Image (cartoon, rainbow, N blue to C red; front, side):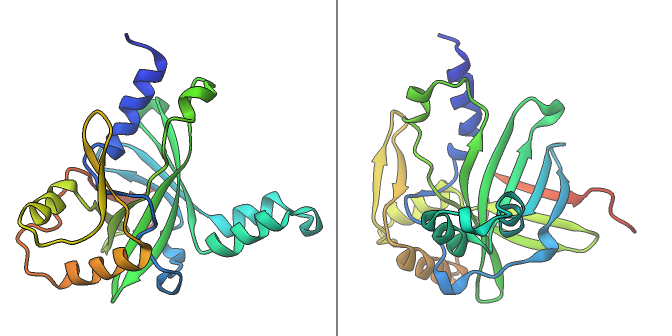
Length: 220
């Protein structure tokens, strides 16, 4: 049955079908590192628009009177103030998704933890309550010429390690597509990334989801 809800789920699968998903964040509190040079408007190799704004600045702009901010929102602000809101708009403004993303480093390598923040839907609350907002992780490489290269950690790479019994991370297999979701702690996930970066694994960053972003209106 072709419904708008089904189309929405198919669109979300663009980000969730082949990337590694986790219940917990991939970063630890002491590994986050804000990168101001990621802010701005970008366009990728698939003609999709990305807008990266500071979560901290967005929160301040929307809460001029700090006395009216709840303690829960203040705690969330402290926890995520080094993050971004990333608006991802597909070609011809057909679909728009918003992600909250936290930058962090493993050694000198920059990563970003993504989690869905908001997305267009048909207002059906029952549908939205079935969708679990899991975390994913992408390696961020800053290239010359105002470009970024973003590579998501792919399920295929971890499947190989699980099948060879070379990976001990906790996970569950869920859904009608039998996709696996990591259930390890953030500390365990971060430790895995440290080992993975050092491991001699062929094509370990080969991924079905990779993008080259070019800054829009960049000066030569």
